[in-house]
Length: 349
Image (cartoon, rainbow, N blue to C red; front, side):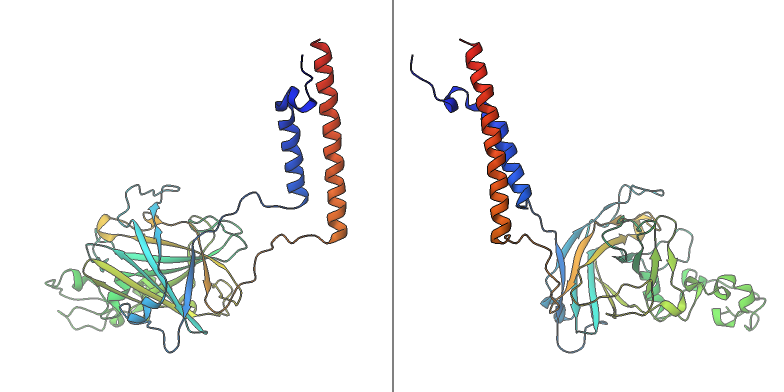
């Protein structure tokens, strides 16, 4: 009978010890087992003015687009299983002091009025994580605040002329409006009312204000049911939306820095977390009934972020110590396997 070597007797007994040895060596040497890189939206740095009022400007073509698929918001009531917007395409630009985003998506209908009880507007929002890491992508969470820029199609239309009941019912007639300066038979405008009888306007609610200067509302949230407007004094995001040939193109623009504590600030070397949401008014979408994306990374071109910590080869003394340790462990495993193998052969005759 030919003499068998220790290894040839049963090579499968070496698999587990060798696997343990390799895993231990990889751990000691801090070798990454796998790596992944998510999609990053990069704001192209441009010379000259940003095209903040021209969503169709060719300057936008300088930025690399990122398509963000959207999914139904089915986490919290009111859930919405069949959203009308399936994806948005986003580009970003900056000039060193201000940043602008263009968000576009397909929408066959232009819904820009919300006066009747059965009317709902088209809308889109950009969300930034204010906390360290990435909080829940739907409105953040306790201890994980988010800053939301919410563009509304009806607010865009209001900038050209405030929409009220006479916009939805152009043939309406009235006898008199009490508590206003309007003459009998005239339809009163909002600024002719005594604000005492327009409680939302008197409370500073932006929804009721005919003096809005932007189609974007700046908000903060920290979980479901916590969405809060930053008030009239905190509205520093400019917006411009245009609908053409079944497609919305919406621009958001703001200074890179902000003194407001609940605002996103874009600092050099920073990688921010950004997400998106959209509403299709003709599909009955409003509030939590919407489509949302997951988080993406965002950074400014020309301001390279600090590289993440990476493994660096240890110095010679540290490497020698590691090699001695790994060799010792390997020898111990080899001796144990040899003993087990010899015992197995002796019992088998």
